[in-house]
Length: 178
Image (cartoon, rainbow, N blue to C red; front, side, top):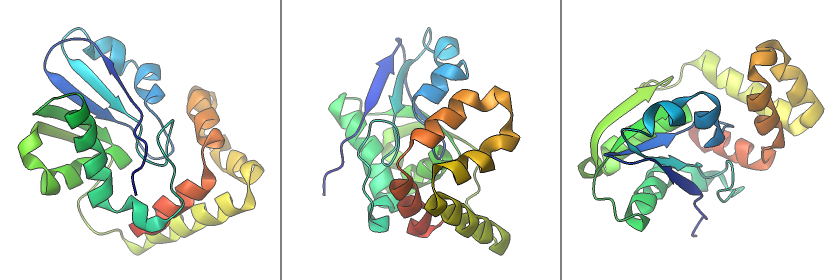
């Protein structure tokens, strides 16, 4: 089914989609200075991935297949009547970028992808995914404790992650392990 897509635009110039990482939101790009640094030269399209921010949060792992994640970004470009854009994605955003390179390459002039690999996940990463799911199943206190080592520089990130929809995070993690 149709999943609500939340996005925001800032600035003027060639379009550039900014796609945040897992458990984040478009607010990350403001907090980290990307919006201030890029809006003078680009029309920024900040997209909350499904399961995140103010976008729809399905609880079915099938809703997080790469085809759906890519289609959401293309739908935002269509909504804004933008035929072609640049793309910058980090972590989950990088995963979405790889999907766009497969499913919609004609819509992007460039893909800048960080914090992600195109290769299959190694067993230790899959074990970490299972551990993360167990923590979410234990609730907010357990998740807050797991984020403690990040330190005070990540307070806004931690607050957003803790406010997230854990069932959506679990569904996405089970979809095919980020």
